Length: 397
Image: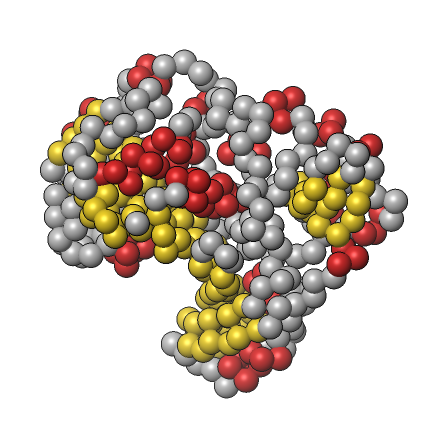
């Protein structure tokens, strides 16, 4: 038998964006685990460094789409008691945990997976139980990092590799049948701490908000998307700008909330202390930057559309805006919608910021999961995997 360490990249395209969802699976067992037949040859005869690409029709890697899995519910069958008071109604296009629906057939939601609300008329709710990728053609790129023979089998579970690759949320980023998702009803941009941001950020915090592996992934992404010599705005910046050392940039401007943190950032040529929640206009000239980056901070914006539109103003035509984030944040200052969303709905929310601004094109989302956490990380004894990384980007029209 062979034990393999493989990075899978699942690529799919919705109407509005190109999506790439990467996942590292370590210790895959060629004898015990079940691979899609199209991958058998690549795994069986593969060696470290091999790469291959495989195309799949809709419903091959996932369960096929079935109309009967669009289910109408009486309003009483949606358990509103589980919703937060500020979000007391089901929202169009949003995903909810399986236990929120009281179905006549309790087995209709296998393993209680999330379902999507697709009709919110008062007299009738409609939910979609299909896999969110069921209707999309998929491309799967795999890169074998390591593969070695193992003589002794010590037990373990049998994994359906296709379920591992497509499970956990990929597909939630896209709108349902191109209908805008209702991220906006209620009071989604309220915060636990509604006090002035200037007071909250008055004391410097010289901490990293993600583990080193996740930071490295974000830096590498910036290196792939930003050209050498580009002028860069690091939005909501701190003492690190998450740019790779190999990238020879033009001038880098940091806009943040704490002067001491900005002063400690060696990459910055200009430092601006500015509260975007109080004044969403960036204090810079039109077309001042070739690229804008925003790392692990978009969840704090209370006026995101105003900010995104102003970022388009300060970008040169064709300039890129890259927004990256993970699953760690300061709870008092994040918008209340953010933690209520599924991890893969958050890229959909940020993608909606781009779409609703109407000023960006060539939109893409990307995720990376399953990488090992650094062994000396303070959470290494509890969390074996690195912080997941999600990013959304687009270019100024």
